[in-house]
Length: 327
Ligand SMILES: Nc1ncnc2c1ncn2[C@@H]1O[C@H](COP(=O)(O)OP(=O)(O)O)[C@@H](O)[C@H]1O
Ligand SMILES: [Mg+2]
Image 1: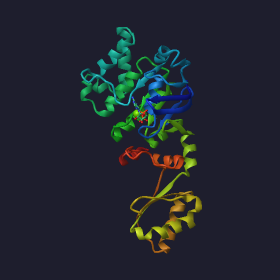
Image 2 (image 1 turned 135 degrees about the horizontal axis):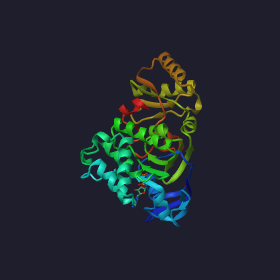
Image 3 (image 1 turned 45 degrees about the horizontal axis):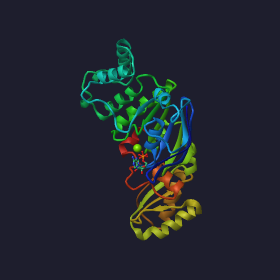
């Protein structure tokens, strides 16, 4: 349903997309995962014909974004990074307006609006002005607007950025049910957990390039599954600790140490067993820790592993901790 080949886009002399290749099958949820500035929104803009690529091709539902932008627009529903609902209108009026804009007659428009309000759990607030909606409700209304005319392809740019954990979980529910209906979804996200939860396949992008592609499991296996995160009671223990980690985990472990020289992360090839062995060896060595835990890979780990540099400093690559409850 989506096929992108060697897509390039410059802003002046700045290379925003540097040869992107992607393929999304019908009915899939495809996650485009990357930090701020990776090129996610630029890719979305090309796919939705809001901007033209410099070179390369992008085909959406059989239509080329450059040769047949109208055909592309007829096949996609787009929900941008910032929800575009009219705050002065009620939820019902927002949907009605979109339906009318797409040329549905009055009867069809009303029926479709009511149907979407039900599907997106907005019936109770349908007559409230959207300006009074919570972030999650607004986001659901925006998603519903993108689906009014039942497009075969839905493109969602950072659908949960800025939502609280509850709103994020609700939005995840809505997105997974879309695909139950055969819709193809391309979503962008900065959150590994979100891609993990929703996407059948994931492409990791950085600096306008795809640096890894696969199912979430394939990506995690390539990262060495779990990690140990621990904090030493003193930086004086660091050298001995690194020696012990090398002995217990092996030379390929490549521990990461932060600037305090007290926080260490290291792959745990055998998960819990590795953690126990490490703690026991540290104990024998007289080294004390204030905390030590198993952690799943984060986006930072993906980036560090794939690129050798951390995700950009200002990017918040982890969900707020409360949001991990349901993940
Ligand atoms: N209109 C523009 N003019 C100049 N630079 C831009 C423009 N839009 C985006 N960029 C730059 O291109 C890069 C990719 O941006 P974007 O696609 O928005 O990334 P993402 O959505 O992954 O955060 C960023 O470095 C951004 O600053
Ligand atoms: Mg963006």
